[in-house]
Image 1 (cartoon, helix red, strand yellow):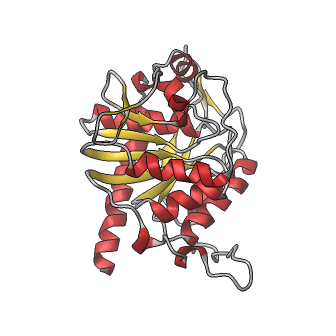
Image 2 (spheres, one colour):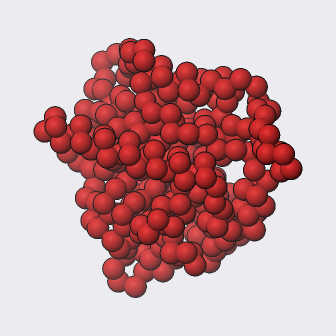
Length: 286
């Protein structure tokens, strides 16, 4: 496997590197009863990142874990719709109570703050980042085995807040077979590396289409570049997920937590293994 590329820095001359600013590792919020915090991002929109986050969370829940989803895409929240959740959140004295699906998945999102689903969130960066920290530290998550954070596109205010203020145990990156998606994912990978976030691996979404009759698979987006990208950065290729009409159908009905597929099970298995290995490496270093 080829060695990872040199880590480029985006720090302007004369400024302190991102990972060394106040709010770095020593200034992160306490985890409380949350055991593992995993960010899921891509750097760009349109790759199905939110759907992948929900499906992975649901698979972990089916395996018996207590799981929550923090929807950090404040201006474009979609997790509540995919889970079939609505209404407003309440505070009963121990912090904001997350919305809960029939399967037991817990979720907070800016969508619960809006009167209508089509109402836009028109906020400046400081308000958005303040809400993200409130969603982590001000929510009564209870005892969670995994908290998945659905990251917004880009490498600006919200991802920076998540990386610097929230104790992330690792990050999963979502891409699609096209080279263009890989180009943008590289930016997210380099940002996470620059901020010392463990890289758990790469999920290739929309990898192939399976014929419902003969089960033959073909790749509508052409040759995949995902494995090569994972090798370039020396991170695990966690697996590929198909283009499946059931994902759109169940998501539109608010039932994506019910979606099951062997490929999804394998992706989650590989992610959990990568997380354990990353934590073992950290313990060895300490």
